[in-house]
Image 1 (tube, helix red, strand yellow):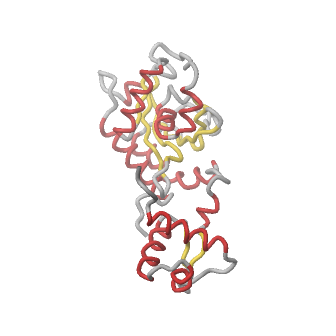
Image 2 (image 1 turned 135 degrees about the horizontal axis):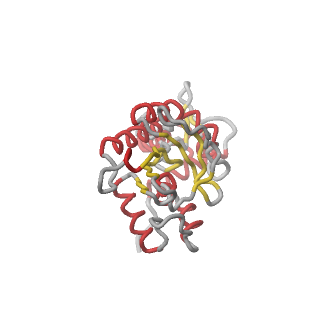
Image 3 (image 1 turned 135 degrees about the vertical axis):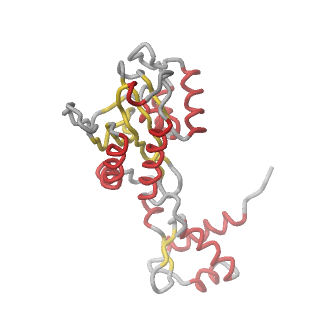
Length: 255
């Protein structure tokens, strides 16, 4: 059986030290307090700053990061998600001509946080705030695939059938979720409503955790080919938008 990982123990000790102090500490103070070489302490602090568990001010002093203080106490606010995704969702709708939506997991459902109508659409029902099923929509399946809380909520019981194409067997949905994780995107074709298709991809935060999903919906003829497979160009646009919104949350940044 393997023992403790020394670098993790040292990083935890740094966080505990900073959390116990009312004032920020310098590199030399941290190294001395924990009997670490300055080079070792500097490397650990650099990593802790990268993941925002520690913050460094203009004077070169370190304190516990706000992201660490918020762990377990807050969750992503729908208004914040909408604000960060607004421009990219609008652009996704413009580039694809389809309705674009952003969703997040809340209390057993996928909840629409932002909705942009399709170009030239006569449909005037704004879907912001609407709850949609996790297992029968592309937006929802992304959340099911990557959010353990969503999976626990839905996969522990029966899956309701909404159309003749809805996946209701646990083994089948688990296989599809594995495929979604591999592909990095989800598709639904007439699983929630007849003649309605969707394509969605995950939105990740700085640490890589999936906090939301973004995608498009439209008629099967508009989004899919004759074999009910999504058009590759539309998939690429959804993935592009997902990467852009993820970048708004710090995903992929190195500094």
